[in-house]
Image: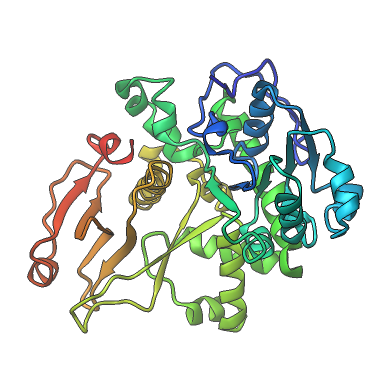
Length: 397
């Protein structure tokens, strides 16, 4: 088995701190060999600092394969892997069984060059990682049609933490997951102040810096203001025109920023569900943050649960993303939506799967809830459940 735990975590170039590891986190994809196929590129997406590089290095060190590992941050590698020069590319991988490229989205035309290697170098295995699907997906999409396998690595999921804690222990630490999130460095760092400092580093040293480099965004203040507005609107529909008014931006620019934030694995866009009723809201979106800790760092609020007035929003964000992780890791085919009418009747999550509709309401407190009557009238064969802090593990693990 491969473990996150080592004596000291590798220092990322954006973080100048080291962290002593006091626990081992077994990642869901620790056996990457199951997904590695000759003549296909294995692409691992996910937020920066979610553990992609560590996962890759641990796999390589235990793979038994002769491998070459390079980074898209390297100017020389950028030039070589964007050359489309077959002879140069073949010479570059000569004698190796596996090529691994970290942060591949920084290499121009990487998709075309990977296609050349896949087609022209028999039995070569290739793994690439990327923290921005905005750049990498666009580059590898068409060139690697039928030649790629894609995985997404999220911040640590509750289902992964079950390898370290039993269910009672996991529930007992729920306030920590809800407030500080699930980034690996956060989990292995002891002490509230150290966690806060690290989350601030994550937001301001990599999140904003990296996103500003995408699509040549220049106004960091507007981007941060947008994130703050979203952070205060978890669980509510978002109006692009209203966001634009508050930010002094046109709605098209707001839409572009939101798209970039989504493809950089910062926020998740959830659309409204409608099939029968004219009064159902369908055109607006709700936005969730991939990680609660990032959300709280953006608004600079790490107060304990009993000192917060936004625990409902925090719980909704936490459960929604943990469910996303479960669906992704266990390959549960489903279309997710929220449901709301203009009169205000609502359900937090609708999953369309197995030919049925499953409705879920997220409640921090253990209060009972019934489905809105408009929902039961329109969708009589649907299944309704309440997810609270007592029963949530079954839903997300």
